Amino acid sequence: MPPLPRAAASRAAWYALAVLVGVALLRWTDQVIVIVGTEPMRRELALTDLQLGLLQGLGVTLAAALGGIPLAWLADRYGNSRVLAACVVFWSAATAMRGFARDFQQVMASTAGMAIAEAALMPVVYAILPRHFQGRQLATANLVFYACSSLGYSAAMVLCGLLFRFLDTHAQELPGLLRGMESWRSASFAVGVVGPVFALAVLFIADAPRRRLGRAAASIPSALPADAAPWPFVRRHARTLLGLYGAATLTGLALGPLLAWIAPAMARKFGLQPAEVGTQVGTLLLSATVTGIALSALFQRLWGARWGVLLPLRIGPWLTALSAPAIAATALLPSHAGVRVGLFVALVALIAFNANMPSVYQLTLPASYRARMSAVTLSLVAVGGALGPVLVGALSDAMGASADALLQACAWIGVPCALLAALAMHWGSTAAAATIDEVRRLDSRDA
Image (cartoon, rainbow, N blue to C red; front, top):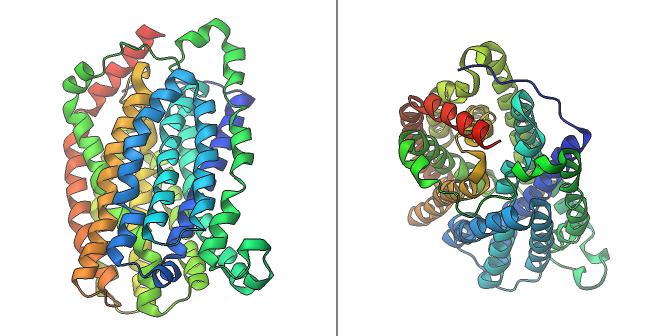
């Protein structure tokens, strides 16, 4: 496969990338509040592990999957930035309202509303970045977005730990209705009220590329033809798409429980407080993310010229297979240090693979229906990945919700999924080159 061409990006392109990274950080912060505040929320509202799994997994993801596809259609029809800005305002309002919930149903409703609106982010990112970046700079932009958003998740974990510490200390000094609230409530409100600032920044993304391209903007995939028919393409390349997205779903099933349950699992097993959990888990995620992205960059330097965009599918089976014994080690090792090492290795392996996958997702879907198909595939992947926290929560309840039950349940779910993901990646990679070549021909014809 020929190497990707070079193309210069404008300042408007880098502004768009910076704003999208900021919005991703806001989204992670909204989600991390639930993770860091899991134990005090569970105690105050008398929640079960299954209910917590629904909050962090399948329940909200099913809502997001139902909302993500029509939101992507609206973004294609009425403008990516307008729809995303409205979604940022909506999910921030839902986050703030979660702070006033009185039972599981109210927490679930506000969290589901947040998830529905957040579902617009990734399809919009997948549609906006190819508009602003081309060739190798598209791959660079995708890696930058993945790296920053991933580091943002870790930073959000640390930030929420510090925020919880501050709110616990100054709970009686907060103004109005926030005075004396549990920290997970006041944190939800504090983070939710800053959303409109990010929404305003999003509104400035769309006009720049249209002014620069003029009439050529008509060919940009933000105005997709209503009669675009993806299904013949999907049938021709079923092996590539099933292998790629099947592997991504299985990887999500392995990784999702770790991200959702690592904080409460560490708190139960080692008796950590929320502030300690946020700081320790955030530091662990941050170091694993930096290491995984650096490892991914090293792979690109060593083998990128040889394999090009197929590199993630060449190394992916090995990385996901490596994560399996590391996940198992978290349930088998009794010490705090041993569990952290196992988690670190598993996260590094999965992050190193995922860091270069966005370009593959984009290059295996033609531009004429990339946003809508991205929404469909991301919804399927998200639903599959969200099953992990729910299955782990149900399994943990069945095991008695002991101090070790969460880590053991993560291993029972994560290990077989990681191994199956390796097999799916290997199976799909054998046809991926032909799929990418056809996408390039279709995009060249339609340009």
